[in-house]
Length: 330
Image 1 (cartoon, helix red, strand yellow):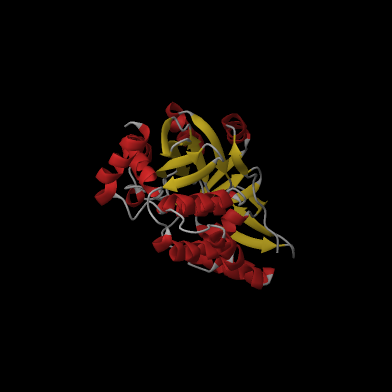
Image 2 (spheres, one colour):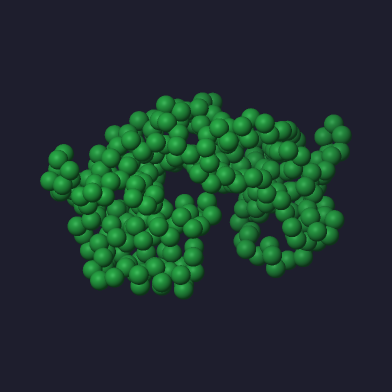
């Protein structure tokens, strides 16, 4: 069985992504789920929409997996089922949706997304507009989520001569696969490795569901202000990471990497560390490897790199500041 995907951008320029977002053809339907029906031609799935007239649209993976996710169906099982079985499951799920109308988004003639009536839409263009004051360096995006990289204009040296810039990542999803979120982002200039730090903000992510009008836009602005205040603390922790042994973190990091890159490649990464690696060494090994992955797995791996700072957090901030002041002059 085949399903379609929209274009994927990997750290592309803002002009390229913005042009795509402005030029794409979007069509939205609000209707009861019993007016939706999935059919197939033996190779592809199609969504039949019975609105003012009956239309059929090829189904993208984002539509397929969102409907399966709605009922916690394990998406990895799809490849083991016949297209007729998948079609039957999708139609049963459509008929089982409670609560009245649903939203269907069609992008460039293909069924992109299925969301509930209480879904709070915040377009990627709106997020880019909110992030513009930070200076946008690049954007990664696919049908499932968007990741915005700001300029990294706050600098720190974990090791003398090894300069890192701190900026921000903003996350959004027009299809409901990811919450709206802001994270601090660390880029190591010497090799462009990057790490995503969920410092003090992971619990504040906003799902696109059940909020008052403009709540998501207000949340985004508040999170950006909060993250700006956290950069000095994270810079201090980054310096401290170059002074702490990675030994207690190696096994946990290996376990987290296995589902992303496999056992063999995870073992090779761990074995490449050498003797007595620091937390900073381990994080760099993980984030260097992350550059070889697609945008979804890259985010997962770079989040692991950022999470290596987590054990230090609040109780070690004061001590970490002392290391920072000593090495880079405050």
